[in-house]
Length: 461
Image 1: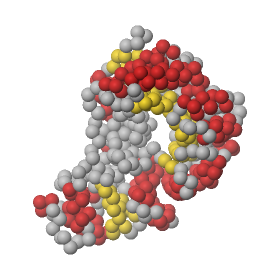
Image 2: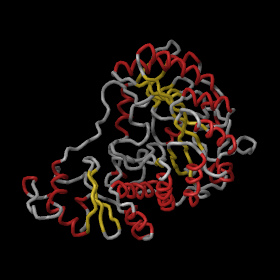
Image 3: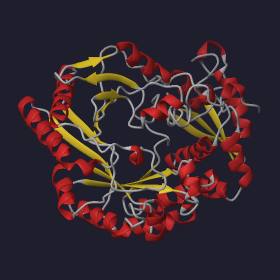
Image 4: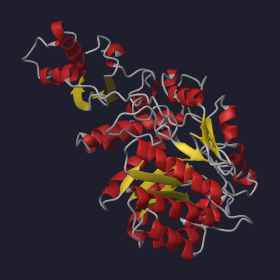
């Protein structure tokens, strides 16, 4: 056990405290006196708690002797968790919170030749790493604007997979704004469809209008029903603003009753000049966390998972997004990047997430120094240093939330993540009623989402 106990955290829960050691997979609920007693036991001589009569003796022993699962920084040759393909940056929508630069897109599509070469390159990596999954994800703009490119990738990957005894896996993030035949194509060939649907019609159409201020709700629902009746897994991506945060439970129940889906992924709207001009604003972080938890309980009764990307997970990690995971995302011009956001976003944050290029001759050129720099940028974030979410949230979006030089103070993203993560820890301990009690105490919620350091070693008792 390290003498500073840097990876053991204490989270206040009304008059009690959560003990949480993410690298050891240990969590427990104790009272205030227990926190003081636990610290004494952990500091006992020779790493063996002296007071065997203490009720916390076994917990202390586990915290001292259980092995740590420390996420290893990637080293060596590039080993992408998946291949990302951006067939085009163009989009048939005009969302009021677009974060993918569709309004600036040139309309260019990835060439068929480049698409095939990207698949071949990735397949060689998968084979060299002795993996068996050819995992390919599509991003946009709206990927289905370039359905022909998607078909080239899918059929090339299926051919390569058959030749080399690999398992092809396809996932797409889409707005669902296309004809039924396109939806059926996804249902046949894709394993997972992540579909944007922001709730009821008046909300969705305010968030996600089409060009000419036309509504997109009916087409999105039709696509959701077609995908839901296919063999593809349907995941609903629902953006939450002040407009729909108080209706999250109602929206969740409607999704669960009317769509055949596996997952609802709630994300918060990010404020930009565009969203402000449209009268859209991010939700209050406490409101979002509270209604997220209540929505999760509703969906559970239907066997449907409600997720939040930066929530507590079973496996600790150094990033909750593609950045830092060697993810290779190929743009229409052949650039290979670690993120699907626009390069302007990276540059404004002082980052460069490009690390390679697929050449016209089919050769892939990688810049090892850039790969190493990207792998390292997700580590040692000052804002996250004392936070109990550091091995799950890991700073959220490394471009928009914790870029280099960001404030060390928690922002609204941190606050909602800390609350949701605390609720998750309690649910995992089968203490489902405690979050409801916390929600009745604004003071308790503030204590959770605002304490600067959760580390046991510095916690005042």
